Image 1: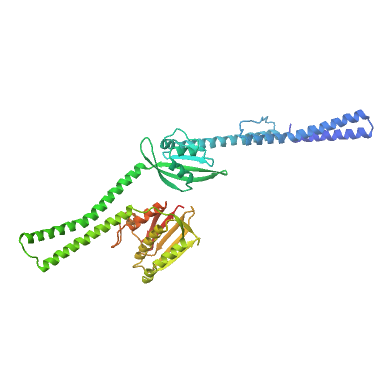
Image 2 (image 1 turned 90 degrees about the vertical axis):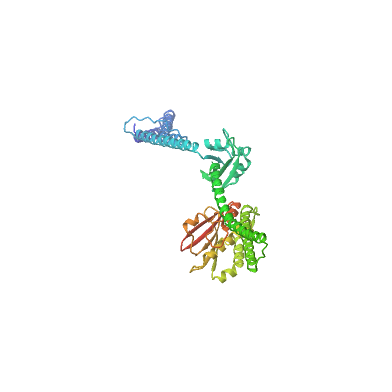
Length: 447
């Protein structure tokens, strides 16, 4: 029966019962009949309330099923055209749609979980309590374990790796060596912090880059040997040749018991002077090489960037004025503080500023800009920008290689040294340049 018809019928019955009760009281039908009609009215009101609440109960039950993810219940449909029937049809359609969405979501979850587990890169996710949520097959293989319940258990595998996982923040990375049955592994550890449904958790990636490092190391050694061979041979060949010539001349004089003329003595002196200068050049080269291999361990202190920039300006003031160069300083915020070794950072900036000054030799506009700011990732950035001629694209990929230089006079170790100093600070140095527009060197500190 249609809900509206049933409701109106019960209301009419209650009204009729109330009318009869009033009539019985007025006509004095007696206590028994009045009591009977009163009880009848009460029952009619109870039935009316229950009937009116029946649809609300169905809606409440429907909502409870949705809340508890119970989508399998079906509401009976009689196809009699009543409102209750229509309501059941809508309920069943909504539940079917929710059940389909749930199945699709579960399928997607299982798909991505399967992909996650079978990636070649080791992946671990864990919550704030350290409980492991997902540990893929590659991570198990890298860590040589069957299972991992809590991230703190990694400490028993490698303490350095445990500290890196706990302390690294979003975008942070670190290289860690761990022992493995297959040999020493060099792991690149990368961390991302995520917030989902109010809960924070970390995603850690572990990638064994031992083979790549070994390949790069071999390539670096080959390049180094080429450079050393080239430089040393360039110095030794003329020294050896000149020494041989001088020896032959002197031996000839001794064998023939001849006295050397004043002109010949001057030639001997010039030859020995040339040998001395080339030997000094070779010594300086070796000294430069040693400076690359013996960078001191940074002594970290708080560095006020504003004061550092002022000190650099005073240090280079005469050189800047003599060459008509304008120095611009941009700090945001003004009170920016950097944690690092002041002497080493100052050495890097002086080297970059000297390069910028030399790049402005033939420039029409002579401006150097020192910038300091915090980027979107929360990293402290220092930039040295010049308006010089720029660096050719071919040279850009080589300027950090030891002893490579585009200058007529220069050892080619300044930028290599700067890069190593930045690595000691867990940072990086980047360069961008455009011919005719200038060059920008960017120092990135991960904090």
